[in-house]
Length: 116
Image 1 (spheres, helix red, strand yellow):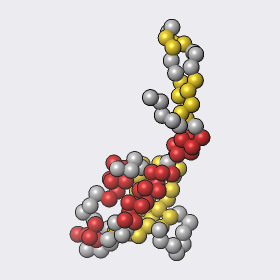
Image 2 (cartoon, rainbow, N blue to C red):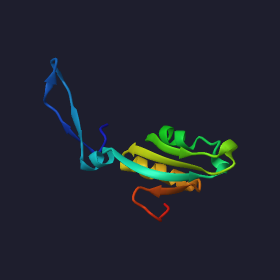
Image 3 (cartoon, rainbow, N blue to C red):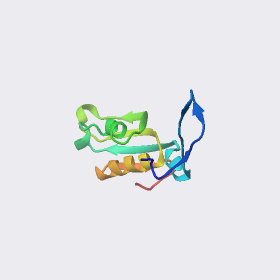
Image 4 (tube, rainbow, N blue to C red):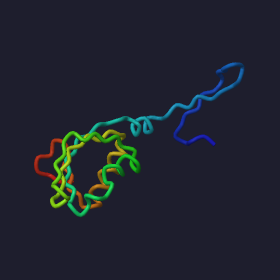
């Protein structure tokens, strides 16, 4: 069965065999557009041994670039990270929600005072 959000075009042949080309509709293209978002976050010392950043990659499919970091010696203080997150809007939204669900303070690029 073909995904309901795909348009199907047929009739062309390749090596003498019929094949179907699937073209995503507009909503699927929007979800697949890659965006890069800069965030700053504060990870409490209680979470410093947790794989927070690697979870953004493995569970949410984000590409993460650490552009700056400040960590206290032996995890005695909170950690601060400046990250570039790359992914589609759904991945970014879910990844940021994950961070805030852990009570990690997150500032989006351009926010001078607001915390997500």
